[in-house]
Length: 373
Image (cartoon, one colour):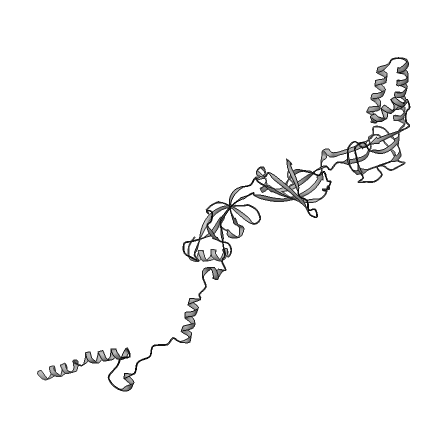
């Protein structure tokens, strides 16, 4: 029984030595065996494909590079909300005067002989002959002469009133009294300063009583009738300043809000706002198409660019920079339009916070994939 045990011991005893030798060979420190076994095993050199993979990993683009992300800062500025609308320049209703007579007659001489001629108040427009007026002048002259012999002030006053009611100018009535002579012809004068927008007579023509001979319009002040959409009426009371611009005119005109017409255009679903504009230089002309910039009183507001907000399921979001570089999280915000470039922030963001300014649809998709919402 001793022989098998001795043989087993002899077979087992060298095993640790062989194992140790194998471990040294693996580390390149093998000292036993042939010359090939004693050579140092070289370190493993990375393959070209491994180097390329490592380089690509190091150059892997960040979120900013991948989505071409730029950021902006939430700013607080003193600004005024602006609204832009369009409309037409029109003449004021109370600046239009019709020139007519209360008698029939014939045109002797036409002074206002062209349409759109500019006249001043008191300028002669036309000289006419009217049998009715001439007879009234004679009656007044006779009353003056008769009153000198026999005091009849009531008759004199009655004749004078008749001339006034016929529209005879007070200068002609005074000339009859002073010169003791009745002129055959009667002159019609301009009642206001302005432009002749309508002329309905020619020299040598006849006319009937109450016929409109001219229409004169004064444009020292004009109206602008501005078209407003229904959803713009809510903020109308907050708008204070109105600046009118007309294409082709470098000057800017300040306007005053005077009346919101109490009726909407059913075809266009628009309301009409009337603005009054000083036009002493006569630069603005009725019929011009104009643009008006209306704004509220200036106040301090938090503002962001329109490109920094995205609407999702009826809610506005911005992507706020986190404490980790290159990471952004969507935050719900409340905003309202300030102008065509900016939003006013009502809640959800604070001054000087950094938010994404573009690539919002890519950021939105990334947030949905990662379940951030």
